[in-house]
Length: 450
Image (cartoon, rainbow, N blue to C red):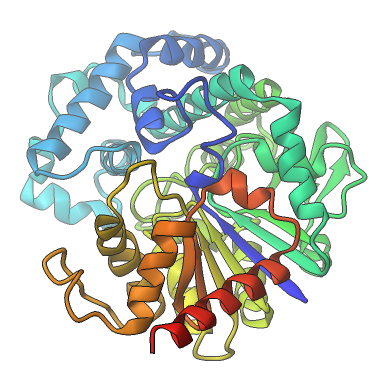
């Protein structure tokens, strides 16, 4: 039996939290980008490397950095769009690219129409040209420090053990693809070096590990950090991994200015851009080790991310079970894979989410089931609150009742929804038995409703 897991932010929230209001969420990471203390911490570390290389001070401080983030956020908000950290960094990447080189192919049109004047105000003009190329990279380091701060204040042995025990008791091949940057899976499944799981990173002098394509693609049980990890360190055209996460931050900063490819001017430039951005004229992006922003596709031109996609496409086609935990289904580059694979081979799919205490079941069905799961997996199903209690098919009424009473049910005969939350799901002893139990209850209720 083969199982493939796709983990979104909701899979980490119950385990990485300071309290009920401070959890590892999109809103928390968005606040981190405006946290002057985190910016100061990052810039204090970065400036020592910058000064050693350029023989001068960095041209901006934490106050300017936060002003730039707030300015960018305001531009997005003025367009009536949600200004979360991904949208903010996406726009900052574009501005940084434009200000670094206005004559790159992708920037010529922007320059021609002068649309940049809407975005670039006096706070951007305080930074010298040499510093623009580093700002997007530093935003990602700020996210890293924010994650690490929350992780260090919240992790417990019992929560890590719950995750470890769940995956280790699954009988069969298990492949885990996480969209999260945090340390949870590594700490739970890899850290002791005796794990049944592989990240595809081999021990390497000077680093905890370095990515090896063959090792990853041939491993039986794998963990793939599809959007990167706070322990990732770009290394000589590949990716290193360091499980001392503060050390990983320092290694990345050191690597920005370390001439790992040689001493010529061209080789020094290539060394720097492998840490701050990847690409060539007309095709630059900044997703080198932490993938964020609205458009993530370019990151998959490079390893380990290209290997992740190759293995992912194979695993979801071959899998008997696909389990999607805590994702809002907005990652098109993954969800289209999932939708298309169902046309190749029928399989069992489990969506793990949570019905909150006292949540209206009709609103949950309209927003979550009709608005997200059904749309991606089957033909769109449109139900409004006005029609929720009128002339529903018997199978849908059974689903609604099971969700209200048990917080689980079947959307279709091969798609199960488990809405008791991630922690309860990780306490389940056997997924195959769970599937059969809920399926039998569904069939029984259908017969009783005739």
